[in-house]
Amino acid sequence: MNTINIGGVPEHFNLAWYLTLKNGDYKQENINLRWHGYHGGTGAMCKALRNDDIDIAVILTEGIIKDIIEGNKSKIVQTFVQTPLIWGIHVGANSHYQSLNDLKGTKAAISRYGSGSHLMAYINAENNNWDLSKDLQFEVVKNLDGAVNALTSGTADYFMWEKFMTKPIVDKGVFRRLGNCPTPWPCFVIAVSDNFIANHSDELQTILSIINKSTKNFKSIPNIDQVIATRYDQKLEDVQEWLSLTEWSQSSINEDTIDNIQKHLFALDIIPKTVSYNTLVHNL
Image (cartoon, rainbow, N blue to C red):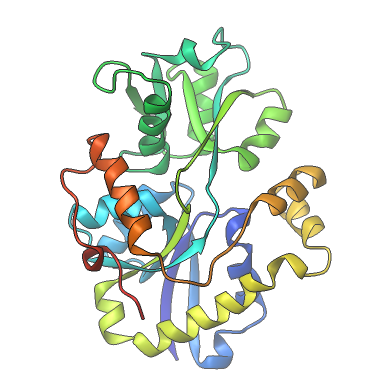
């Protein structure tokens, strides 16, 4: 039985992976799929793909595109979540900042350079017509716990993270959310190392077939809203809103979407160049 390593954030978007693993769906196909949770997010997973610590990553679209262009020998094989990710823009509960305009020129907490929290700070700055060379500063905090410490102690001023995962922290009075910043594209893709694609195409096809069947029927799982609320410490009404806004995908990512993302990232000087569709995507 082949052992295959996959990484993803330990968040509700990836519950379908947990359920299929718990059900033994991959072992029934003679695949020992091992899940690795990356609290550090996209930057940590990019590093893990480069180091061959994982073969597959469920990862933010803009983050893996940037890293492939910078030398990560991997490809996107399909879209995982079709809908945008809604990033909440948070400050500490006792912060004197009251609006997004107040954050201009202040310091953003980011999990690491190249992470979603880093890249989306640029998107937010662009949305608010800030000067990208002068109005952005960063403090690396590694993960959500690090962001809580940084915003509470004042070593950073604001933090961008998926709004439903941070909602319990807002509800507890640790963060205040000043606004939202949706990604202008599908938020999560499945990326696979070139080596794994070349040598394990059949197993990859099987894994994708299993997870796609699960995500296609995910919303119809009995009491799935209650399962998510309990597992991720969410209020039931928040989970129900999240489910209503979220659509999974079982398809490859198209060329127009890839071009649009690269256009945005290049204009923001996040990537040094744009590349061909086939450099970034492998269609099985």
